[in-house]
Length: 109
Image (cartoon, rainbow, N blue to C red; front, side, top):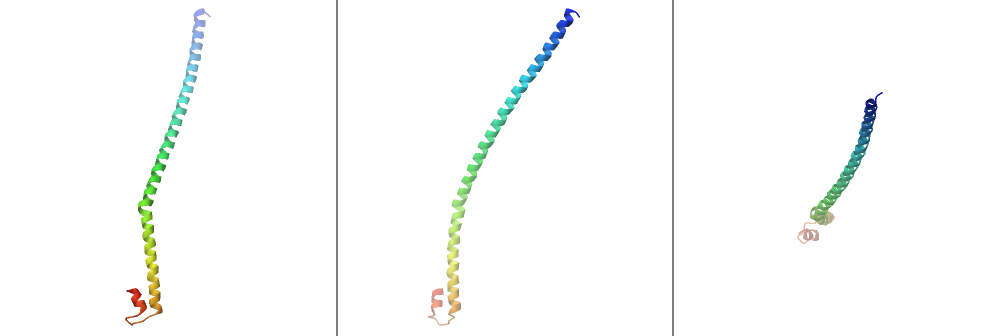
């Protein structure tokens, strides 16, 4: 073997080792970048989810304030009216009278 062959072998081994080291370091750097991007994506996802949750809570509060509560009060009023009508009908059923001064007739009017 000549000195030139020996030098070529050493340079080939060094270039292979350098390529492997570069590959290893680049791979580590790439993996770290991927981890950072995944962490950023998770943080953004959590922030977005929090925004959606607060927005949906705001919508539910507005819905309750503007629709549910007024309807509940109206339903309660109508329920009271229906109960009063039932009582009056029971009075009419109990005391059927045709006189103009009948208490059931007067209460119905």
